[in-house]
Image 1 (cartoon, rainbow, N blue to C red):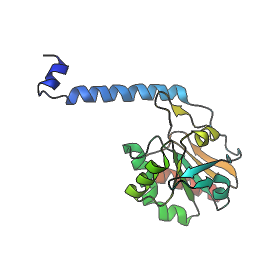
Image 2: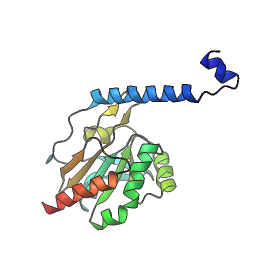
Image 3: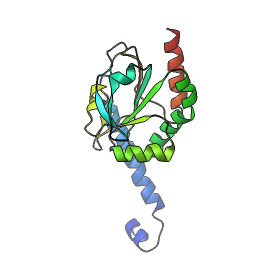
Image 4: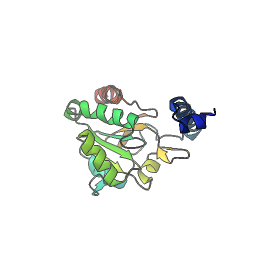
Length: 189
């Protein structure tokens, strides 16, 4: 009996489905190796962009930068496992990070409505940006994952209007620790 017939006649499709998912993920990883662009160098001026937040309100990034050190982190898609781990890591450490003066902006290609749902569902205490046209990712030189057109996971810390730190392969569940280490280093300078 063929695998497709086994699925049709009550057989287990688990292994076929897992094989398909693993193949897809492997292909995406290969594509991501070729999609890396030159990131903004340390010391580069922070991009001056405006985009809508989860409530559909305009966020002028330069205004946020003016309030203090700012983390701008890019993630592929709201409510996906890795993106949820990353957001929740930052959420769980928010009191400490924000207490050290850090502003946080999470950016993805999701709509304001999807960002609002993600923010509310995960109880995120920071602003999410709906970069539906990709202009924010473009300004930060964040490459898109081929075929699916979502930004790669990258993070930037902006201090005094300049890029003070970046991670081109940002962590998911360890995001807060990675950002805290960078913040400690930046604040010592």
